[in-house]
Length: 371
Image (cartoon, rainbow, N blue to C red):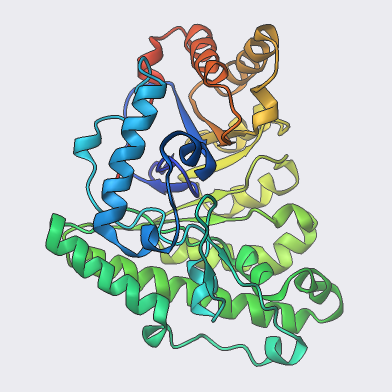
């Protein structure tokens, strides 16, 4: 199976999510992710519970965040057109929705991303884990209510939730014990992963179905393998790859998110799943090999702040020249910039990227996609 391109985006502050609506002829785009405290320091943003449960308030907040970004970066206009922002699902509960379906309460914070109250499963609870009847779950019920409000206010229910990945969620439910289970209790590990996979697909399907009834088609899925680097390639193939394959078979277009670490140990296995629509990785990865294995994939380099922030201009240019030489067409994600980040360094990174790729700096900025 072949996936068409899937593109990353970050709705200003929060989890990386994806869509298929950003295609253009630019050889590179630079995506920037700011932590909530960046906005808290500049505009007094409160990302508490109301932000995640009131669609009208959230849309107004996104517009205010866009104006704050445009004021801070008038040349780049990272906020786009604030008035064009519609209400939607993006960033509801950040990375906590699937955990909430399993009964892990969502903990909200004024200037940080929501998190689950991680009450971990013991052995007996892991062995008896079942797909939750999430239709009666408080989080799911409130999400359906929000979608009704969004359709009433804006007509279409757009935006993306972060559905995490199978091992990510198993780790939220079981903690480090899920890795021990792979060695000492493999049947238990597979049981937990199987239940998580089925729950994730049922939940995403329910959300996609509701969005579809408002005229918004979602036919793709990007799985988040943020903690896969905690296991070997062998254990990935045995315990996680079967569920990544199941997701890939279930959705028309499929991609894999890893975070900013070296992905080499898993790249060959990923290439055997299908032709991916999206793949991201850290700069330490073997870039030439990834380009060879994934010639038709939207390749995204996740740059941790210390990869570029605080580096000399020559070091930044050398990094960018390496990326252009190996990948050519790609996306760059400069992630998790907190309130201490100097805006001049962000500007300098955009300018260096424009110089290396030989294009106007304004064309590096992806169009903000909401709701």
